[in-house]
Amino acid sequence: MTGKILSLFLILIAVWAGLCSAQTAGKKYYLMDGLFFEGMPPCVSSDNVVAFIVHKDSEGHEVMELRLRKSFVLPEDVSRYATPAEDVPGSEAFLMSYRGGMGQKLPIGGAVRTLKTEEWMGKAFPDFKVKDTAGREWTNADVVGRPMVLNFWYTGCGPCIREMPELNKWMELYPDVTYFATTFDSAAQIKKIVENRPFLFTQIADELFFFTAFNVSGMPVTILVDKKGIIRHIEQGTGTAKLRYMQDKLQELVSE
Image (cartoon, rainbow, N blue to C red; front, side, top):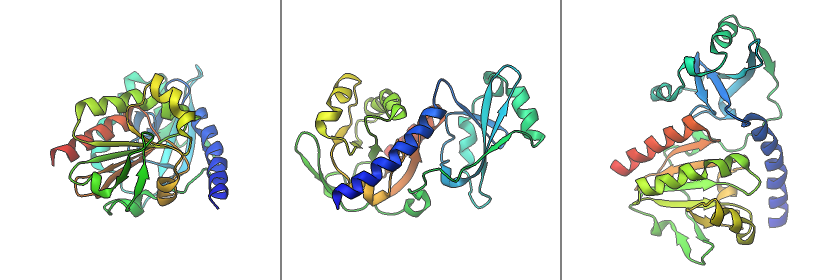
């Protein structure tokens, strides 16, 4: 059974990896409600999007517009993480196309959508018992009273690897937080990346518990849990705006 589950995850991840690689070459900007974001905007995942629309200018620049579900309410503070229009090449042409209802609409039927963020927000983190790559066993009791960060990654995920230096900085800024990274790859498979990149989170390798509990297939995913064990934020994907937003949310959890 475990083999079948792992095979399913690998198939889903292969599809998602293709989507990620297509969207993360160089700086990728997204347009949402007339605002530009470097990388996917905070709090937004494919489950919240009803249409992807590409806008281009005459010099070959392009931006991806995200049209959100009407029922999805975006937190008010997300706009603080937008990139000024003057810093985005081609922004004037993009905004004219956006306001004129133009652009090329892309199909979204093939997107991998399994993790349901809204179903977990405000709920208790599930009971767990896992071992890290050093052999230590961890349970909920070991992390109570401290905020917790759980990051999902794997060795073939370029965006996962690119965000590691920023995640490491959180450990310096907020040392009184428990940091976990989980992957279905083995300890031997992740050893080179973890040591050379490096990635300083406590590594939970060759383990599917968290993947099955949260139905995670696309990565990276980062979950923030408060001192009482309540899930306060889940972010799918990565990017400059998302990382800044998550760091601010982690600061809030530390200060509570």
